[in-house]
Length: 456
Ligand SMILES: Cc1ncc(COP(=O)(O)O)c(C=O)c1O
Image 1 (cartoon, helix red, strand yellow):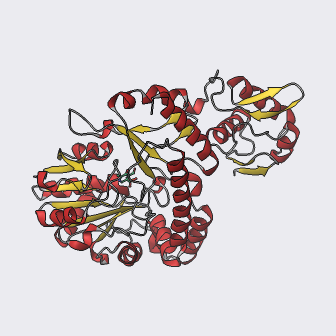
Image 2 (cartoon, helix red, strand yellow; image 1 turned 60 degrees about the vertical axis):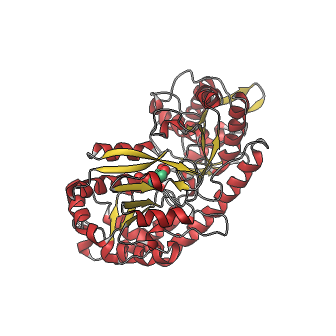
Image 3 (cartoon, helix red, strand yellow; image 1 turned 135 degrees about the vertical axis):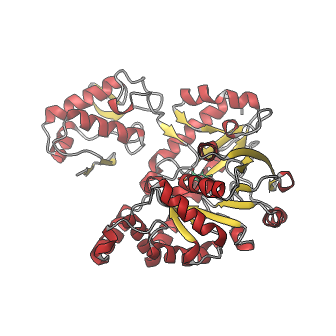
């Protein structure tokens, strides 16, 4: 069981199990510092207070603090309270065994990730209790390959209401997130004789790798300020992010949406952050324009957590049987209990409340980030999602890794996501959703340091 305690300077949750020893306690404190829960310069609890709170010998805490000071995590001084070291602290002299493959950067602005501390633990727990109290025994069997009917019914109603998707439960299938969706669709399309998948250029490379791994030939189609250049599409299927192009942030223009649904290719609509729109201009799902030509794909990875591995597809009717056959072959079904918990959260209104709360938080971070950027920088894709895009010259982008290492910041460049071999688009994908609330300010300072170093 994890222990929680508070003091006047840090209010932190230590993932530490009583009786697990000194190394485990040191690891829990390192993690709290890296995650920003113990903020730079904060006074840490006295050895006496922490020992009493955790029920361990004071000498244990004293030794842990001494080790962490030697590693550069804590700062001690004669006659002064021990504090968390400030950013740019001494390098670790003895790496945390949990991270021996290289010290993790202290700050993160990685794109595509929600703040893990916003996961609604209490709501999830309450929904789990309700599900376990009421679900029949056969829930604990193997379950439906296409997903629990309870969740499919709930999703059909939810997606209609929130995203304008034309869904009925018979064409909804539950998958293990978008990566699994690409696997399953890749197999199903191949079974139908379709062996080429087009992706936006640029687009997130790991999904293209998944498509390649299941035998699809991957080709790129350029993106401009209106989204995918439909006139250049010449493949039987295409994966698009029309609401918020990943990584450039463009919203697909109405004329392009119409042209794409009339093109004839099967469209796979990756609506990965559709819940997070900050302007009043709602962008509905493309799927509503052509439900028999568009596969709608959603995921719980941004709204809840990528650790759940829960996503969903709304399929054209002709694809339902091939996709269910492919699902059986992949042998992977998201856990039924988790599916029922998600269904409970959606139908009780808890999911909507959670999404609203997150939207407010991310919107305020987006505003702080946009205000902190140098005045001449024009960020793209600020009206939605958990990330924005800042174009850079190739030289500036090339200088990012060294500058990011200096400022201990995890951040991602755009050019590795390009498909074209020459003249890739260069810039930074800034994921303001990823840091925990207390570490956002530190991450922002690190970002400004990086931008200054590379001459932005
Ligand atoms: C463009 C895009 N689509 C989908 C996802 C979600 O993927 P998954 O559902 O596999 O977590 C992400 C997450 O980073 C993403 O960036």
